[in-house]
Amino acid sequence: MSYFTDLGLAEPIQRALAAKGYTDPTPIQSKAIPALLAGRDLLGIAQTGTGKTAAFALPSLHRLAANPMPRKPAACRMLVLSPTRELAAQIADNMQGYARYLNLQVDCVFGGVPVGKQARRLVQGTDVLVATPGRLLDLIDQRALTLRHVEIFVLDEADQMMDLGFIHALKRVAAMLPTKRQSLFFSATMPKAIADLGRQFINDPVRVEVAPQSTTVERVEQFVTFVNQAEKQALLTLRLQALTSDGTIDRALVFSRTKHGADRVVRHLASAGVKAAAIHGNKSQPQRTAALEAFRQGSCPVLVATDIAARGIDVSGVSHVFNFELPNVAEQYVHRIGRTARAGADGIAISFVSPDEKAYLRDIEKLTQVKLMPLPLPEGFREAAAKLPAPAAQRREDASPRHGHGGGHGQRHGEPRGDGAPPRRFHPRGPKRPAGVKVHTRRAG
Image 1 (cartoon, rainbow, N blue to C red):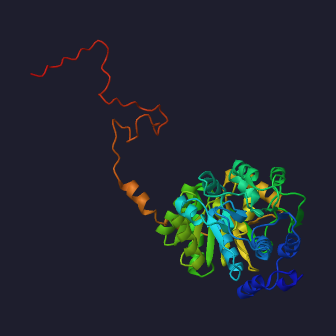
Image 2 (cartoon, rainbow, N blue to C red; image 1 turned 135 degrees about the horizontal axis):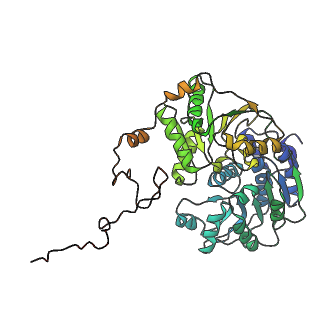
Image 3 (cartoon, rainbow, N blue to C red; image 1 turned 90 degrees about the horizontal axis):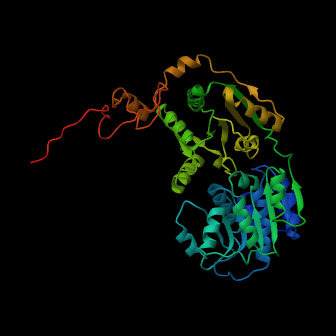
């Protein structure tokens, strides 16, 4: 099938698709939609960015609209579970667009914002609820939501759900869902643990696989630069300075393995005049939303993220992905570089690999069956790196005098000394006096 009009979707849905300029379904949409319209459960294996949201949203909205029912208090007819707040918000936004000409309500709940407001919004019930697992269970535990009336259940990005430790939450949700329902299970990879999880949710599913598991996007040029860990920041800064100044980069994603590492990268880039923002789990939801929106609008050309942003963040115009640190799970590399080369565009992925990360690189190349092309350090790299300014906070720390006791260099009580000697013990009442020495005190008059 080459046109959405051939899939048998309701006219209001086709009108919404036409308003978005959609004419041809993607492979997963053309394979999944007929089976879902027939009421089958579905097991979908596809990389992010292949059009999964429309693949499950369009036939589900068609089914709900064809069987209108009054909303039940604190209930939903369709539940979509997503691993991250950003992906949940994106799914809900897309579904609202598809349902714009239908009398269906779409709501979204996730952590990081007050639960009371979300609970009040669900008092009258909703048709479609998109949620993260933690906040979903919060609402259920507060008796602000019941899953007794769910007709359609969607579990998206199941492998990332497992990576983020949601397995126990998912088992609780599975026990609360009605036995009679349509279930859709999507994952980019299908190891045994994910397949076992899928059997708890889906029954006799149609299997739809639109690409070999864990293959990388063909239009992404993949490079590797071997560099010492201590030199990565300077290399990233110089690369981004050069690429942003000549207009080569429109938007670039930088992936760090840790939250504090992401913040540190942003501080260094800012000191060198490269505008960047960080997004990770320690940021408040308003901060994460503002950073992502600035990146989407182009006012902040560099977004530094942990793997929370590796799935489902559909931002057009990402020309480069930098792996500041390689992920220790090879599959995550596939999702990271999938943020570029979207919607038919080309993309570039550059990984900085230190000596202790070479084993991760071997795992990635074995999984993807792609040999990353070596990209040497820029000419005069170390000389240019020496001229880069340090962040203001670091300059203040370097300039401040250190105070301590007896050459202890200001270390706290019990901290190891820099020379490797045992930690000094500081006594709040002064040094311990030698044995046999009496101290005479004068009685206060």
